[in-house]
Length: 303
Image (cartoon, rainbow, N blue to C red; front, side, top):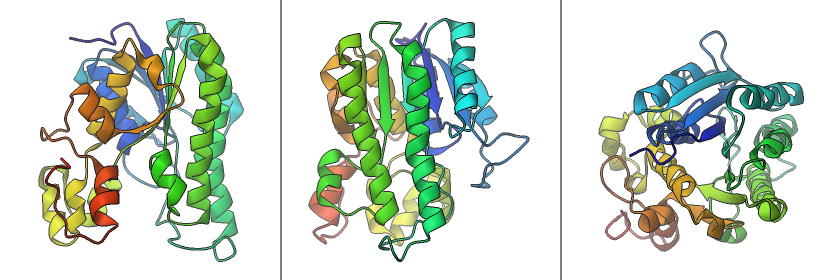
């Protein structure tokens, strides 16, 4: 079954990691998916990684959907406007927008105050992690609200509940993630009268390409990393959050999520989907109840 057949999605920031997983799972559900990013086979972004939007589009095709790769710098309003005009010209509608743009390269500055942080790097992080979401929403939402039942998903790191009580990584990272939370909140308010829904969604400990590389493992042997990092046992593949997005997009009662913050782990329990290995990791509950209190790694009851 392809519950999203005939639907058009834009996954902004679909080159790798969660964005790629989301694009592929939307394709598996039958959607036409525009995948955007700055890394192409002809040119890499400042992240300087090998993944490309063309590869993502091919994976969408392979999954059963239709993937359309469009190089876009979402900090450039003209490029974003041209992207949306192309979607309207080619498809006539936009039903799903996933704002997953991030783009930070290198290690974040862990536990650094605003005065200790590299100011240029911090401001660049805010531009890539916040301004891009605003610019994309500005141009994409007028098309999205033309069709009843539109869905906007703002991707972040951490649920509202967790982030409200915990300092996240560094000043600039914390502010960026908090800003995206408010973007989702504001969009929920503004979209409410248009029969559209805005949701804030977070994956758990994501086995992105960069994370697997840093830990010296692959997706097929990721559990080897738990010998050095025991709590990595709660990690999840990008497909897991992709399935969360596909489940939301296929839910005829998705309006109940308007303005809510949720996670891949929570949605897996409600929509009855699993990760690639058949498990349902609930990373944010695990983090709060096991990892933060300093308990030994034990995922029993959490995946």
